[in-house]
Image (tube, rainbow, N blue to C red; front, side, top):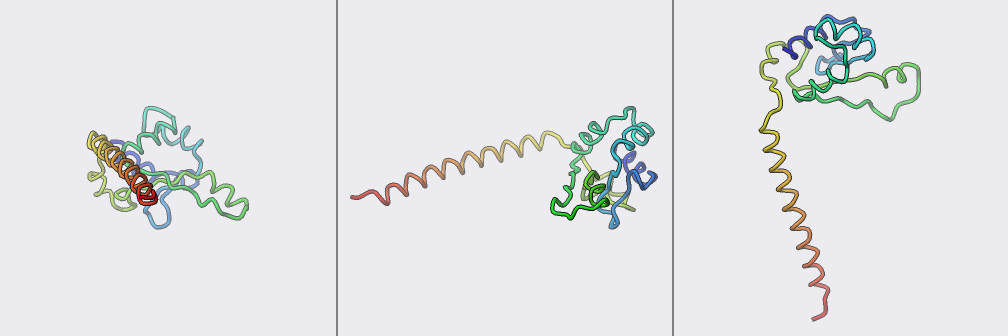
Length: 140
């Protein structure tokens, strides 16, 4: 539901408020305040931009950071307030891919457990290396 509504929202939105990027691989919210008060309530039962972003994050969307190294100009200043979002299967002209986007679930927590286990193993190995390095330099 969220995905089809968001897709429709970006396709039909006033381009000064939100639109697809030129290449169609991201969408850009240019005026988050107007987007929250005027656009979100047309599709959802709230007008909270933070909640909208949180829901996108649950589905694996990522906010694309603006390039921090830019010359200051009125256009760049305006663009610095833009919110850009990307998901590899949320593409302009490809609504058929929406069904492949899944909400994050327990497999993510399993992945996190595996990563945490690997981090612990790396730390253990690092401490062993430090000990071995100390042994090498210790006079016999």
